[in-house]
Amino acid sequence: MSLIDDDKPARKRAHEIGMDISMLSADELRARIALLEEEIARLDREIAAKTSSRSAAESLFKS
Image (cartoon, rainbow, N blue to C red; front, top):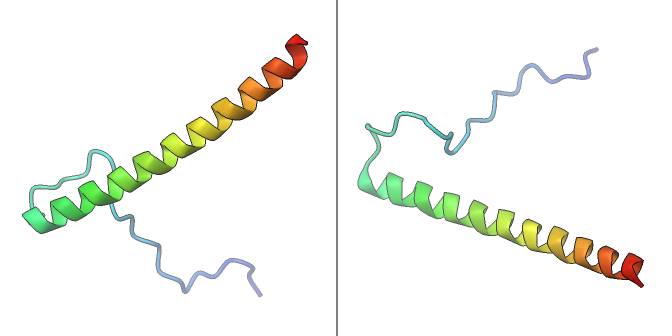
């Protein structure tokens, strides 16, 4: 018995940087922009969290 489930279809990415977008409708392009904006916001939140943690650690060791 295999631990890997080969019967599952590979998950299709909603968007891949550099992919051909010429066949997408304006609505599909807007949806992808929204998806990417949500991802940017998620990345910004992670940067803020890491920056905050680092600042707290640096202030602790400066004392």
